[in-house]
Length: 191
Image (cartoon, rainbow, N blue to C red; front, side, top):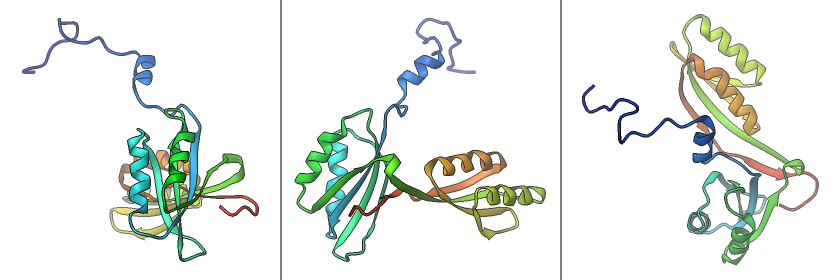
């Protein structure tokens, strides 16, 4: 191969061990924070919230926005990995934004969280039946079928969505679309 250097030649790096590779990547190492943020339903609010996280070096894992029971208020549900940066500083800054009404860091044990995903998977002949069985096990729903592909809708926890993805990937995952997590606290709290 032209331009390639053999391993061990001067100037080439030694291969990384698994431990070194894991240490060098941004693996999730802390508690996932699910923030439920009530905001005034006005233009520019989402941009200011996302900008605040970006300026502080946070990577937003999922972000969903939707209306609430009050047409003047929207709910932003945002998930971030709290290990890389302390979450309390950013929530204090969020409170200072004009259109932010209320912020709650939802506790995993006191929260019902769901995500919706669509999977387009290659499905020829015998594979189609097997895929439909897998979908049934995960309580997925077949929403479209063509000669060569099947689209399956799955709703559930992030872990369930990821497990389903792992099961169907070997069949030939053509495309996948996920909504991001939405969450609501159990009981009678107001966020």
